[in-house]
Length: 352
Image (tube, rainbow, N blue to C red; front, side, top):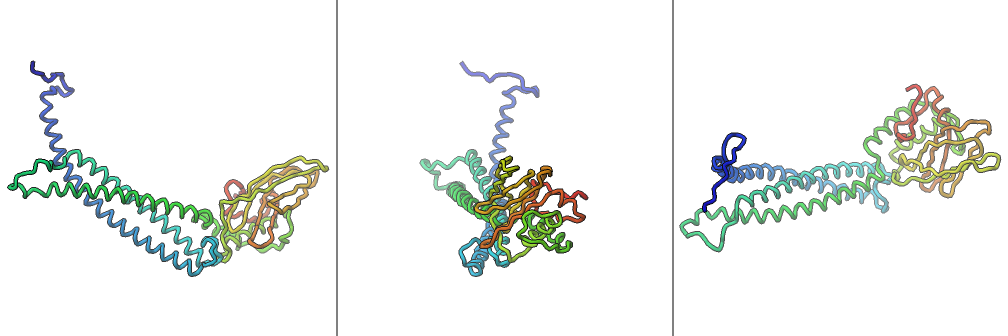
């Protein structure tokens, strides 16, 4: 018994039997147009890929030249980002910019190659490979270019897959190097903040104070922040890693009895400087960082309050620590509130 097609009505009022020729024609049209569309897309992608490859190779050569120059200027084995030579640090910062651009270019290359791989898979479903077990008669050898093109496409597909794998490895290397530099070098935003703080510090009169004095008044606290700004802006002072934060142990005693004990991480701001905002209570407080300790005494009738702690540990030098009340600092007419201060310190000029 012959099988009949169902005659269910379609939304447009046509039966499936009536729509079948149109659907077959549409599929045939897609099969004919897809290779042409893919060819046009492939040509544009190839041109863009070539441009990206040329740029990546140029940036890679430029990066190698920077590395060679740094090796000539900085041969002590320490990271270039921590060099005290301004020229070396400038080269290290330029290398960061090159790596960022390399990541952008390489990621775009990977995207285009993956799109080509997907397109090749789509073409394979509509363009079957030739049946080599049943060769065409010799009279039809003139159309032999089609199987050759399919063979070439299969070869290019494998090459593209290898390129994607290789570019992924390069991206991992670029990201690792970029992260290592970021542990020491300040960001563009931080550099701008330092420059703004430097301009502000230059407008203040130098206020003499002793670096051995631990507890400072508001004016001296402003001067301490000014000195940090000057060091951060000095190209001759080497950078320090900013992913290492020293721990400050804080213990307060009143009438000989321990009334408070805590550990706080100091926030690194660059060039071996660290800051924190802490709360101190009346009594005798000992601040301990590694093997060094400093004592601060607040009047017994005073109230607990917020204090700024600044810690400087220059390589090979004696550490320097200062503590000053936030209210005393903000009470000054023109206190130095540098832009490089971390946001969590929340130190704002009352006038603002």
